[in-house]
Image 1 (tube, rainbow, N blue to C red):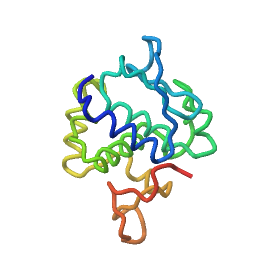
Image 2: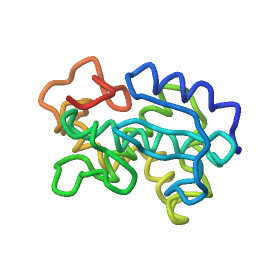
Image 3: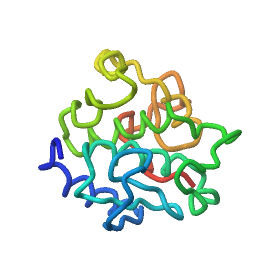
Length: 166
């Protein structure tokens, strides 16, 4: 497992915000190595997990789903087709905020093994303060940012108002 030292902190954080996480042996054909989504929670196989940062990304998919849909989320049936502000981009922006909250090196989240080789481009965008998906996070009330939300409150992305969408 690359970045294995960050695994305990990531798991503790995800449990702490209210996402259900269980560890068990998974088949070798999961969408991301060592991670499955089941009934709105995460199942992790630490033996197969290659990149702990992938947990944040998958958790992001769950977190940006409206609460009413989250419990039905299973692998490859995230039911976010047609759901506003619950796309890949919002999941990425959420995961980035979580990585900042945990003080993780950005490379833990956006690593060379993921995102179809586009991780370098994405990383550069985030480094420059360009956050695809931020508009959706603001629109669903999860965070605030200048230009997207009316008031300049105390919370500004990548800080979050709430980690799970209502």
